[in-house]
Amino acid sequence: MRADTHSTSRLRHDPLVRGLGWASALLGVPQVAAPAGFARALGVDGEFRHRSATTAVGVRELAAAAGLLGRPHPAWLWGRVGGDLMDLTMLTRALKNHNGRGLGRTVAATAAVTAIMATDVYAAVTRTRRSTPMELTAATTVIQSPDEAYTLWSDPERLPGFMAHLDQVRVTGPRTSHWRASAPFGKAVEWDAESTQEVPGQLIAWRSVDGADIDNSGEVRFVPAPGDRGTEIRVTLRYDLPGGALGKAAARYFGEEPHQQLDDDLRRFKQIAETGEVVRSEGAPSGKRARGEFPQHPARPLTEEELKEALA
Image (tube, rainbow, N blue to C red; front, side):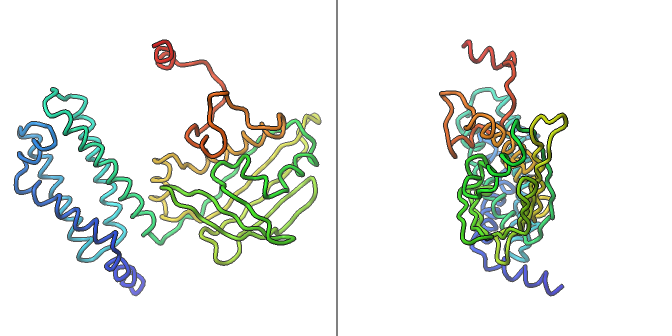
């Protein structure tokens, strides 16, 4: 109970939380008081089903306002995220079935709700103190000996070359280094790490030290592939994901799915190990600008839709 009270007190004085509370109030009052007029302001007609939906959304906004301004809790923030998803679904349906009158207002409303949702997700994730322990595993095979693969991976400052969300790794001592990585919603996290075990040609293991933005640890094993056909790279990562299960779902929604990130990183490591560089077309951006292309996937024929778009 004491922890819950402390959380409520902390959020009560949070400018972003209070701002979202007042935003809910300002949106909710006109939707309940004049649903037909509000619906028309969004570019849709005032028929009964639109008035009913507008009133229901208004009641939801007023409930969120009461919660965020009266007894703030992360649950109210996640409630706003869920409401935003419902609003986007309704607006998308309205756009699909639009008669053309007031279309610009509906498009503007959709864009506004998308921006509001990004703010709500950011607030919910950063104001939720719980975390979810996660363990990720992935593997790939490279046409190199274990010693060669180990040498390539064992230099921490080379890791951002194939780990797209890793901005910088700086060696600070014989067994220590400082890491900076991109996080969802345009944020960054930093931590100091120490090597816990190194066996040349076989194993690299590490863990973050006290004070890390995200506690993490991991290991990379270099195992001879069957038939002496190179080396299997087996990676295990463990960390606490802020925001709990809902934070994980939100990160995935915005293209930050941890398993996919790790698979993409290993695919790029394989390319560097075997060709000396990350393989991309001449028109594709390089470095961190290439993040917009992720998740990566193996080469494949164009789909019918992609072919039509290319020919057009």
